[in-house]
Image (cartoon, rainbow, N blue to C red; front, side, top):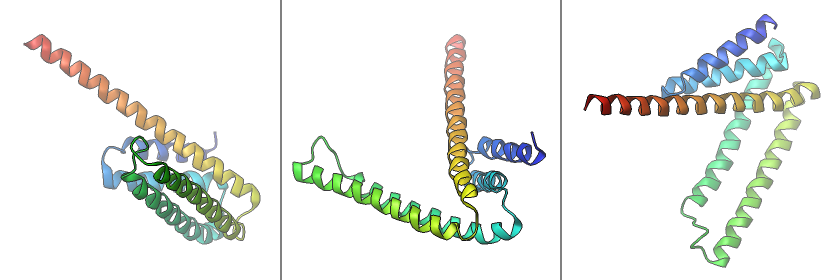
Length: 160
């Protein structure tokens, strides 16, 4: 394993292990994501300088699209919705997917002015790998927390 890969992996693990400590944890997770992506894409300093502002802007745009849809979905219950309301929600979901695709195309074009197609393909893989590592860690921490609660409950029952 290359030293850079080892350092990136360690950074990801450290950041993910801090997940339960909210604000600072999110900063650490973001830093680990940046380290992982930078390493996986093998970004030069010149590329990184141009890449990260575009990538961050893309992230903000993606969050806005998701937030808009989640806001609309918040008060929607498919079990009690009318046929018309269900149709409207389906149309909105399609529009969100179209907006996401449009964003991806737009930002891919902008990013390709800074990095190669190989690097862009590696970006998609690195993002997915990071999400999987994060989800695995969250699930693991949830299981550990549940085990601890069960064990604490057993201990309290023995004392009583």
